[in-house]
Each structure stands twice: as C-alpha cells, then as structure tokens.
Amino acid sequence: VGLPNVGKSTLFKALTKKQVDIANYPFCTIQPNTGVVKVPDNRLDQLSRLNNSAQIIPASIEFVDIAGLVKGAHKGEGLGNQFLSHIREVDAIAHVVRAFVDKDVVHVSGAPDPKGDIETINLELIYADMATVEKRIASVRSQLKSGSDKKIEELLALLEKLKSTLDAGRLASTIELTLEEKKSIRDLSLLTLKPYIFVLNTDESGSVDASLADVIAESTQSATSVTLCAKIESEMAELTPEEIAELGLASTGLDTLIRTAYETLYLITYFTSGPKETRAWTITRGTKAPQAAGEIHTDFEKGFIRAEVINWKDLVDACGELAAKEKGLIRLEGKEYVVQDGDVMVFRFA
Ligand code: GDP
Image (cartoon, rainbow, N blue to C red):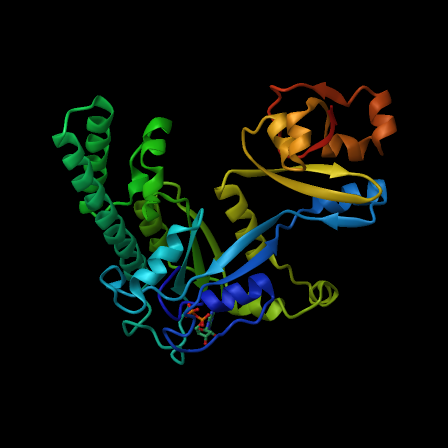
C-alpha cells in the first residue's frame, strides 16, 4: 500500500518482472495485481549441486499491488473502501513511502513529505479499523443485554481497549495481546494488527532522511524497514543475471524485501533434495514434523512415523547423505520434533 505515485507499481513490476500499468496518474491501477515471486535462497543451489537435482523449486510469496490510498479513503475518497477490503485479505502490509524527489512526478499533496505520508496512510488504516471495532462493540453490547456472559464481557473490554488505542492514533499492533485475545478478534481482520514492512523508496543516491527512522519507530512496534530505489530495481529486473554480474551489481533491494516479507510472516524453509528435485517447503515457525510433512502430502501427515533430519550445511559439508550417515549426522525425529529453518528432511510414513 501507499499513496499514489510513490513507486508501488514500479516496485511491483520489478518484483514480478511482469508488466503492469505504470503511469503517472493517481488512480491508474484499479484492480489489485497479484504476482507470485521466488524467495531467493542460495542454499537451494548448493543442495541441488550436491544431489545433481534435475530441477529446483524455490519457496514463493504472493505480492498484491494495491492502487493508491488517499486521504479520506475510509470515507470512500479515491477508490476508498474497495482498496481497504483488498488490504484486509493479506497477511502482511508493505507500505511504500516516497523518499525520492523528482519534480516530474506529481505528488498528491504537492511536495514529497515522507513523514506526512506515513501518517496519512496510518490514519486511513486506523479509521478503517475504528469503524470495524465500533460496529463490533455495538453488536457485543446488544448481545450482553440479553444476559451477561464472562467471555463476552472480556471481549467487550478488549474491544474498548482497541478503540481507545485507535482513537489515540495508534496502531492496534501497539497493544500486547495474548494468544487467546488474538483469537477472539481474528475475524475482524484488523488492518493495523497485521505485520508491517516499510519500504523506503529513495532516489538513485539511496540516501534517507535520518529523522524518518524515528517516525517509523514511533508508528510501528516492530519497525521493519527496507530501503531501495524502485527505479533502479525495475531497470535491473530487465537484465539477465549474467548482465547484472558483469555490471558488478547485486539485486539486493528486492531480495531483501522478499526475504523480509517471508520473515515478517514467521515463515521458515525446510528442504527435500534428491536427483529429481531440490525443493523448498514453507512452514510457519514452530511447526512440528507431521504438519511439516503434511505440506508435501496429507498422507505424509496422517501416516507419519518419523523423519530423518539433517541441517543443510552439515549435509553439504559432509559431501552427501551417505557420508553424513556414516558420521552419524542424520537424526531420527518423531512427532514432537519442531522443524528448524534449513533442515533437510526425509519422511517415513505408513
Ligand atoms: P504508484 O502510483 O505508487 O504505483 O507509483 P508508480 O510506480 O506508478 O510511480 C510513479 C512515478 O514515479 C513513475 O513515473 C515512476 O517512474 C516514478 N518513480 C518510481 N520510483 C522512483 C524512484 O525511485 N525514483 C524516481 N526518480 N522516480 C521513481
């Protein structure tokens, strides 16, 4: 998300290497564009080389390019609520902030003002959440009229706490919530409760105003931010990896954004690797072996017996499975094993 003309489409195009409508007009991208992007991971190449894999299947992440939010979107300004409903469906929000100066590119409120822009977008999301919370408060209150219930009273108290936080102009994510509390309000899909990444779109020099960092720290608890120049990234996206290497460039901005998105969602990767393919599987941090196996096939989960596990680096250092086995580096793990990022797994199932 972001205001119009901050570089969202440029960045999205670079991300997906897909042509999307880039124009110097505030409301040009009406339908959300989605793109599925590879998660860069050089462990895949090393494992694939080790096992002479015929193909590599990386993890992926889906990006949605949501057209510009403007001040007043929650009241239906611009394409208003249509955008907000698209944002509701995502797992994390990447907020693109214009930190580049270019007098040929129109800024919605006159001049680029990263701080002001962050506040504008935050406020729109806060207003949208406020409406959601108020609606729920009203329905919970009327529920309580027909008889008191401890659970519903607790929910009301939580909703009121959320409301006063939002009223004070703070994101819902600034409140510490227990797992139970999170569950009780999950169906509200609050926008300001979602993980948040700031993407600072700088100009070609790559410099950012130092005070911006403070604004970001204030407005979000986790303050994850990625700095890149969308224009350069989009030009680099047209080049082949060989051309990029020749120029001595590295596509770090985009790679960092993709990896940051993955990590912000608490996602980790385990691998399967053999002559047919080396493949990355995506799981949430804390997933146990049977559920991890279920990512491959539900039968693997249902009939799970045990898993053979080795860290990818140990496997590469040992120069293969046979040698790793001889050295006793391959462990047998059961149903309670919590899969770790970088595990290479073989599942035994009935
Ligand atoms: P969106 O409305 O947020 O999707 O913005 P666009 O991606 O369409 O970008 C709006 C205009 O800003 C386009 O003319 C881009 O070429 C330009 N632009 C985007 N990123 C940069 C950047 O990093 N530097 C400069 N100078 N221009 C940029």
